[in-house]
Image (cartoon, rainbow, N blue to C red; front, side):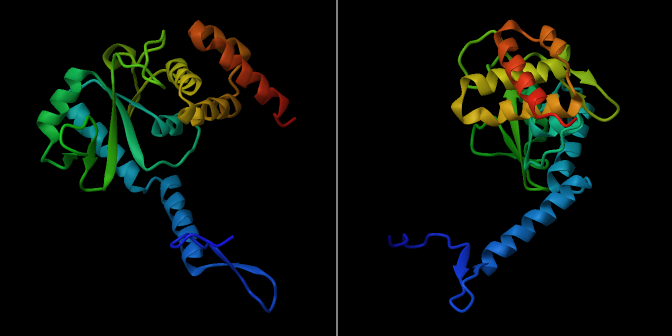
Length: 224
């Protein structure tokens, strides 16, 4: 079968040795990924700088928020790289944030977009709004809460309590086929945090059975 024109060719065969070798482009891309992950895990990635800048701005302006998504997972002990920041705001909080931040280190991703881009660090800030629904966006018993009431403040950031974060990820992965990563995230949290079976009692009934399914899967593969 002929390759499509312009198709990526990460490997090539050495006709003398029969060994398949990486192309220079593919190998360069590999090392770029390694270096990016290294910066992330020592706290020097652009996305982490953007997170600190965002949190500082929201705190200075007294805008209630909660960091969600992959950056929140890192705060809960699941180290996973990411390239953007997800933040929960109320509609009023988003309006206030844009009024004070646009043109001052932030721009809209496109005219009228909910999310913004940190122009200094080149990082997207994706905004989730209170009252919207995770996953497929359709009404369900699990909803993004008001961060003013739900978020817990630490020394350097505001996060949703772990049960609330797990609920949202479960509801997302259960209802959106393109969000299965959210279920994998919960499975890793169960494994790394050694969450007990009884943790299900803290979750909404809508997601409880899925949690128990993932919990049971982790027990079957947990190291002795």
